[in-house]
Each structure stands twice: as structure tokens, then as C-alpha cells.
Length: 339
Ligand SMILES: Cc1cc2nc3c(=O)[nH]c(=O)nc-3n(C[C@H](O)[C@H](O)[C@H](O)COP(=O)(O)O)c2cc1C
Image 1 (cartoon, helix red, strand yellow):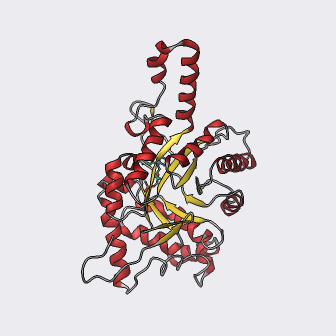
Image 2 (cartoon, helix red, strand yellow):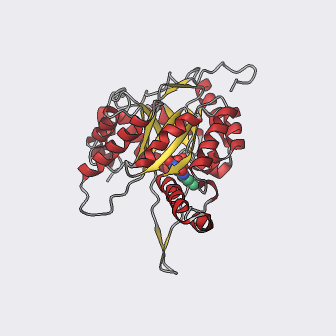
Image 3 (cartoon, helix red, strand yellow):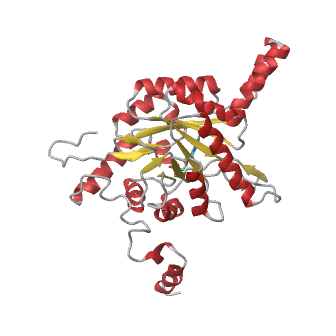
């Protein structure tokens, strides 16, 4: 987006997954990016790219089962089979409609459309990556949403699962693949490095797991999904800061962006792009303008004209006090607070 007259010319150009984006602010996967009108508006207001909501492994398998059932029992079972699909508005589309969305979105805008695959096995569904590529996706975000609830599942198995899913998707496509993962690994840095060695072109830090609450009056589990708050940037900020400059892959920050401040902090820590989902849900797609303008004003106030000039300035590699990201600093922080 061009700056207003009299403003300093800004160059927010950013490299992500080998793609050139006009801006480091990316509309993250979620209901807002499911709609074509929103995607167009997001582009107009300065989004660097858009990540579509995920196509889930379950949706792909359900369609496959539906096809199998129709082949064996005839069209009468169609209506019944359809009820297996999840009901939510943006997530009730099957793979064919998803591919159509990619196609229409990539034809309608110039910014990259990133498709999202979401699953936990390396079975046949990963082949959909290829179809996403053919439909016009510029890249794939692979969200591995796996919660190892069984106490017999060891950490190594979880890590191997991530790697094997990534390898299966990489075998299926030529476009870049980013892995969106959770922070729950014993050695996050090593996990990140293994994923990059297995072919990840970028990492999205982090996935935000749905965590149930308990309704004390009804004694039921509450399955609602809370939108994030800015306080939640701390964990991804730490890992972006630690991993920045250490991996031959892009880093995307996801979680807790509510204002331009969080965007700027993530860039300072070393994020190549910063994704936002909750803020767009809360305020609408038009909120992209506030994030974009806030970033450019902050840069202009410091006589800066590029995002490259601040990217990673506060990363682990670039700060003088290396302990600021590590345990040793904890004691000092506590002492400094008078405890
Ligand atoms: C309502 C809702 C739907 C979401 N759907 C997806 C999805 O389909 N695929 C995905 O990878 N992440 C999904 N996410 C996660 C977001 O992309 C994002 O990683 C997370 O919400 C943290 O970013 P935020 O703090 O900006 O919301 C969803 C989040 C919300 C709140």
C-alpha cells in the first residue's frame, strides 16, 4: 500500500518461504480468510499474504468414505453421509470446494494465497497438497495438530510423526511448505532444526491448541475457543528470538497480535512475517489497515523506511546480553523485582 502524500516512502518488502511479499503482516488461518471479499479487502489494506483456513485430514477422509459408500450403496446414502461433515460455517466445505476457493482467491488477488493442510497422520490425505498446488496455492502451511494423550507415546515418536508427515507432503508438492507447530517439545530448537533438515521452508510459531474449560454449574466441558490476548506473545516471541538467524528457513510469528506493537516486537525478535487471526476476527478484515499504518508510523517516527532495518535487531544473536533469553536471567529478574 502506498503511503499518503508527504509521508516517507516505505518499503515493507519481505521474503517468506522464498516468496516476495509487499508486507510482513499476513492474515493467518481462520474464518476471516475463508471469504473472498475479505481476501480482496486484506490485499487492498496491505496484507502481505493470506493463509486460508485449514482443510482437515478428517474432511478429506470423510469425502473419501462418502465416495466409497456411494460406490457400494448408491446415492440414497448421500444425505446421511453428508451429516458426518463438521457443521461450522467456514469449515463445512469439502476438499473440492476448498480447491475451488484456492483457485478463485489466487485468480482474484496478486498477493500469495497460502493453503493450509491440517492433520496428524502421513496417510493418503497429504496428497491433497498436490491438488492445492495445482489449484493455485503459492505455498502450503502444514498444521500438525497432534496432542499425544496416550501415556505410552514417547517424545521421539511425536517428533518422528511430525517429520514423516512433512516428508510426505514435501514429496507431493513443489511449492514451499511451512510447518505450523506447537511449543510443546522438550528441545524446541532441535525439533525446529530437524524439520528444516527434512525440508520445511518455514516454521509458524505457534499453533494454539484448543484447550477445554469446565463449566462448574453444568459440570460439562466447555468446548469454546477463546481469542488470544497480547500477553500470549511471550512464548512465541522467545522462540522467534532464539531461533532467528539459526535456521535456513523462514520464521512466522502467530499468536497474540492485537495491535501494531505486537507486530513490531515480533519483527524485532526476528520474525520474517507476523500473522494475525484473533484481531481480524475481533475487529473485521478492515483492521489490517490499522496494523499496517501502525507499523509504518512507528518506522517513520524513527526515520526508518524498511522492515529489514528492524528485523532481528532484538534477537538472541544480536543482543549484547545473551542471558536475556535464558534461564540465568531469571534470577536477576526476580532479584530486580525485589523478591
Ligand atoms: C476461530 C479460529 C479458527 C482457526 N482456524 C484455524 C485453521 O483452520 N487452521 C489453522 O492452522 N489455524 C487456525 N486457527 C489458529 C490461528 O491461525 C492462529 O494460529 C491462532 O489463533 C493464534 O493467532 P492469533 O493470536 O492471531 O489468533 C484458528 C483460530 C481461531 C481463533
